[in-house]
Amino acid sequence: MNIKATKGFLLIAMMSLLAWYIAGIEAVKALSLSSLIVGILLGMVYANTLRSRQPEGWDAGIRFCSKRMLRLGIILYGFRLTFQDVVAVGAKAVVIDCLIVVVTLLLGIWLGKKMGIERETSIMTSTGSAICGAAAVLGAEPIAKGKPHQTAVAVSTVVIFGTVSMFLYPLAYRLGLSDWLTPQQMGVYTGGTLHEVAHVVGAGNAMGASIATDSLIVKMVRVMLLVPALLAMSWLFSRHEGKSETAKVNVPWFAFLFLLMIGVNSFLKSQWGGEAWLTTALHIIEIVSTFMLTLAMTALGSDTSVAKFRQAGAKPFYLAGALYIWLVIGGFLLVKAIV
Image (cartoon, rainbow, N blue to C red; front, side, top):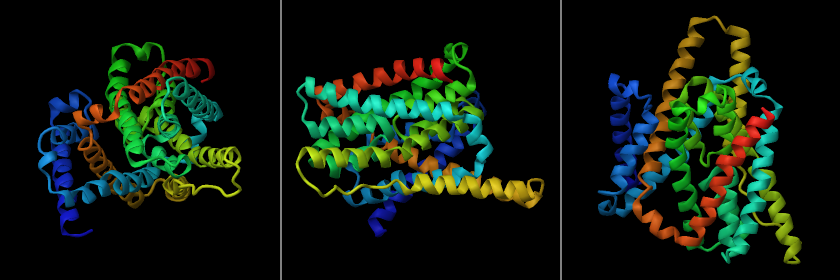
C-alpha cells in the first residue's frame, strides 16, 4: 500500500480499536453487541458524516480492510472449528444451501425480466442475493458483462439488505424467534439466508457461540457454491450467445483455505488437544481473527451511506427487496421443514 492507502487503513484500524474498547464495556456486553457490530455502526456514522471529505487515496486502504482482512479473518476463523463441527451441521444444511441458491437465482432473473430491469443488473443482483453479497456480484460481473454503474447498483442493494438483516436477525431471535427455531436451526437459517460473509459473522456472534459456528459453516458452504454457479452461468450464456469460449470465473479461494484451516485444527486437536501451548496458540489466533473481522466490518460500515439508497434506484431495489422477502420467509420454511 502507498502512503495514502496506509492512512485509510490506519483510520479503519483506529475505529476498530475504539469498537473493541466499546464492546468491552459491561453495559455494551449486556446488549450482546460484539466488536463487529460496534465496528459497523461506527463505520456507518463515518460514512454519513466525514467520508465525503476523505482524501480519495484513502479508499484503497479501506478496501484492503473490507476485502483482504475479511478473507484473512475468515481463513483464521477455521481454527475455531473442527470437521466434527461440520458433520454436526449435517447434510440437510447443504441441501438447504443448494435450494436457496438455485431458487434465488432463477426467481431473481425471472422477476428482473418481468420488471423490465436490464439483464446484467438482474443477474448480478440475483447472484449477490443468492450466494455471498458483493463478492458474488463481482464474481458474476465478467460473465454478465455488467457496466460499472450496474455493478454499483447491484452491490448497493445487497449490502443494504444484508446490513438490515445483520441487526434484524439477532433482534428477532431475542424477541421470540427462538421459540420457533432451535439454536442449530437458527445457525442454518442465518448462514443460509444472509447476504455477506461479514453479515453472517456479525449476526451469528450477536446470538451466541454455537449459532455463530453453525451459521459460518453453512455460509461458507454457500460461498463455495459460487464456483459451480458461475461456471453454469458462463456455460449457459455462451450457448445462448453462440460462443464456445467461457467467461473468466473468479474462484473464491479463501473458502477453500478456510476448510484447510479446519482440517489443520482438527489434526492438531486430535494429537495435542489437552496441551497448554495449543490452547494458548488457538486463543491468540482467535483474537487476531476477531480483530481482522472487526476491521472488515468497520470498513463495510464506512461504505454504507444514505447515498447508496439513492444510487440503487427503484426497480433494482424492488428486485432485491423481493428476493430478500423470499430469503427471510422461504429460508425459514425450508429450515423448519428440513433441519
